Every structure is written in structure tokens, then in C-alpha cells.
Image (tube, rainbow, N blue to C red; front, side):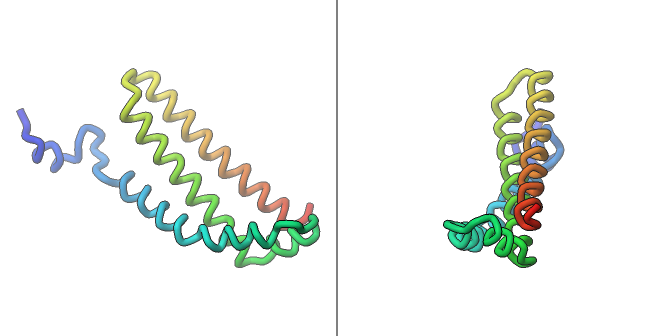
Length: 124
């Protein structure tokens, strides 16, 4: 029989402690810091044709800001959904399949977004 403090010291059943908690907080802070530059870029893109969008998104600082925002938001989404799956899906096989699908979906969204940014920034 273990006390609640004893279970916390052993990092709980998953043995991962608060790693996901802190990663989600870090990605939230990153998105908070990046949201204003992203909003400014989107406003700059309003009413532009493809050549104007290529000119704006082709800038290295803007491309880096957009890339960091996509990566942070996809990572944040993956961690948040994984926590929901781990907390509310009680069937172990279903939980495993759901976590694998979540990982696949997050990576697919990130890669598709990065690909679209590259295509827009190069004008191809």
C-alpha cells in the first residue's frame, strides 16, 4: 500500500512525471509570443495576389516565424490530445490505436503546413 506522496515520488503509473505538462506549457508560451507576428503577417497577406504573398512569405524572418508557429501549435495539439486520450480512453488496445492515430495526424498536419509554407514562399 502506497501513499499519494509515494506515488508522486515514483512519477505515477506512466513513469513520465510532468514532462508532457511542461512541454505543453512551453509550446503554449511559444504560441503566445508568436501569435502577434503571425496575425500581422496574415493581415499583410490580405488582398495580395500570389506574387505579393510570395514576396512577404519569402522573407527569411517571416518564414521562420511562421515555421516556428506551425511546429509549436502542432506539438501543442499532439500533447493536448494525447493527454485527453490517456485520461478518458480506458481500453488499452483502443488507447494505443488512438495515440498512434494522434501522432500520425499531428505529424501529417505539420508536414502539410510546412509544405504549403514552402510552396507559398517560393511561388512554385
